[in-house]
Structure formats: structure tokens, C-alpha cells
Image (cartoon, rainbow, N blue to C red):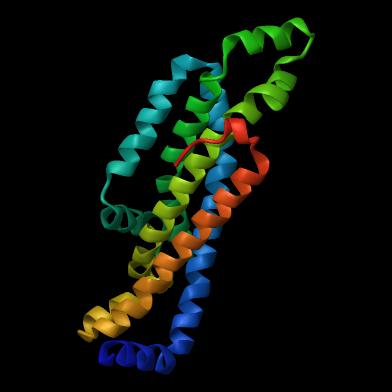
Length: 217
């Protein structure tokens, strides 16, 4: 009980810091994921249609994601400078791989007989993609988005090291002062934010996907 009492006291006394850091963290996560989706959807669809580029594109995004997060943030500082833009660029790049790969996988797994039937009905390439391929690939795409979202929310804690704020500020202050309660006050909201986003995206996926097409977790 003493542990929870001390944790509660820290949250109350540092509420202004935690609240502002939470808002910054949400901003970094939401904007980077939104931009990553806008890049990954057309890119994934394009490599699904021009398969000779699939391995190079996925390979590049995979290599970029293997770079240690903190090192990648540090690499961008001399180029972009410190601040929000540096954090956003890094987070967007880290979010690309799971979305691009799942978009590509979802599109190429559509049954070729359905594509042939749609072509026989006179649907154009764009109409096939919009009315047949994308809806069938949607569960795979959403799985990639959910993975990228959880990953991004976690990596965003490192944004504090490039002056972009976020809940990493709270965690870092706790580590500097050897205050485990302050560390938890930053770590717990990160976990709750990741879980909340994942549940929201899962709900959206279930609402938009027919039951027979839903992927099992």
C-alpha cells in the first residue's frame, strides 16, 4: 500500500509535467503514424503490382528499422537539428516496415481467380484495387498499422533526447533523480496509450471488416 501511496503522491505533485508530456507524446505518435500510413499504403500497393521492386523496398525499410533507435535519433540531429521534426522523421521511418510489408502481403494474397472474375466483369485496374483487393487485404493492413502504432508509441519515449518532449521526459527525470515512482509515472501512461490505440484500431478493424475475413489475434 505504501508503494501505491507514494506513486499516487508523485502523480499528483507532478501532474502538470505528466499531462503536458502525455499530450506531446500523443502528438508525436499520432502524427508520425498518420504520415507513415499515407506513405506506406500507396507504396505497398505499388510494390504489390510491380513485384520486382518489392524486395528492394522492403529490404531498405527493414535495414532502417534495424538501426538502434537512439543511434538513429542521434544520426538525424546534425542533419535536421534538435526538436519535433527530428523525432517525427525517425518515428515515421520506424513505422514504415510493418505497414508496407502487410499492405504488400495482403494485396498479393488476394485470390487470383477473384481478380480474373473482376477483370471479366469489366472492372478497371483501379476499380479492382478499390473494390476487391483493398477490402480483402484490409485485415492484413490493419494488423500492420496496429504493430506500427505500438512500436511508435514505445520508441517515441526517446524523443526526449532530441528535445522533442513526450513521456520520455518524465522517465528520464525519474532516472536522473533515482525516483522509481517518477519513472513509473512516465512509463505507465506510455503502456496505457499503446493499449488504448491498439484497442481502438482493433475496434475499427472489426467494424470495417466482415466477420468471415477477420484475422484471429
